[in-house]
Length: 478
Length: 136
Image 1 (spheres, rainbow over the protein chains, first blue to last red):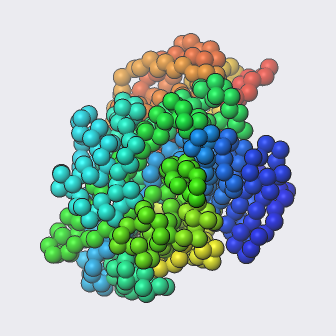
Image 2: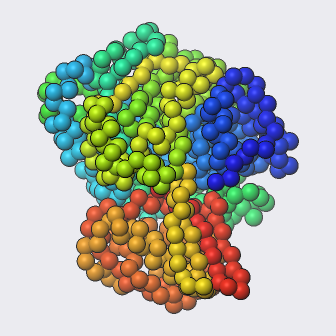
Image 3: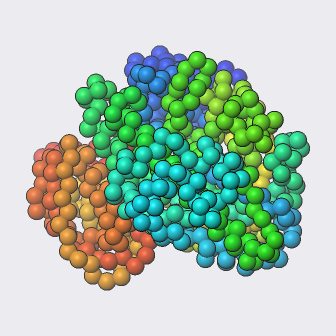
């Protein structure tokens, strides 16, 4: 691990640090990091800043490139990175989106008090673990033939409405309506389709999870009421993405772009930043494939929602309904209007956080802003926030995506064993299912930054406003 | 130098370091390393078919990434992982490997892709070394 301790920087305010464009000769724009002193010290310990400065060298980049308070070292772009590129002369980079295209989060409100669910929690978690496959590669309930998979890639959640697995309300409360219009199934390789054809409705592995949670605290009564959340309510948070299909799309296009950069006279400091002009055949084709993979991810979370609703009806009661509060992505590149410019905004481990006045904020939430869902580490807390109009000026309408990893998986395993992690969670009244001891140790709370601090920085920096804090009751790990 | 490998900590991912007497031996060691990791979590379900794996790329670094990504694809899509490998033919831009394999009973390893980030392949008079970061 190489620290970036010698870089010149200026603290602009208690939550924001700027690294000037002169910090490195190849930088085109300055970099800004949203962090207080404690998080800044953490971020400087690994290669996060070096990776962020690499992004600042790419053609057509718009000032500034950004790191969120949960940022940590990744590959190519740092995780927690935001970068915008001009539509006409900027690039698009698969490495700026990540392998898990449209990894994201959705929140379901049960309309029931958590206390009413608790007596049946073990039975409910068992049913959820049967209904929602987890682990790498495990197939889901929906296995699609070629034509159906192509329709899902083109139509996203809309395809699941006619199969009885989604409602119009679900679509209205999903980012982009659960379908990106630029998707082209023909831009997705047969290999990617082979990996994904039986993975709709699966959680996957790593840091993905499904949690049954309780609303522990409300910070903003008006916004919480608009979202239909109250203290003590039982909610469900789902965190997953585009599975093997998205990974294969990224793998395919990193290779393709690596091969064509010389023709486009693009030089990059890290091959994982392989990119092509957005307005080129290669750039357009990747964007079309990425949008298709994003639609797959929206549909994946929707299919899981369908399974969760069935599990709740089976265990809790036939009359229970799980209303979709919102579904938002944190790994995506989107073409957006910012001021007078059309920009390709890359968010890799960063959440879109549009304010009340943005036309893409759902009508129901126009008074408060777009819901922002921040999953914390297993056993700590997750947050519901709402986007701000200030975020459009300060961060291209973006904020953090989670707690952010602070410790490698190996270090986490050495710090505390899986059985010890399980016992510690059970001592807090948290039931964990579906995870082996290795996964438990690697995803333990101590492996992550303090999510409360991360969210406090986002709130203080006016990137999003805190609405509610959620604590886990039951965890289904991927 | 004898062929060997180790998996090394990375903040959010996993790094694979390999050394071998030659480029051909390094590719075979990469197959063994990733194959063992894929098999560990996928759980062997019996002998798998022998396969010949062929990869073409723009240079050595990309060839190593593409070879590992081919193994990940086969494990996830076809529930197959290599148990042993011999390099039949290896140049800077092309490799052909003959592999004995195992059938996987369940989900394979958590490794989802090989990346270009921090990728290196170096050769000197003692042999060839490589490092590749894997997305997990």
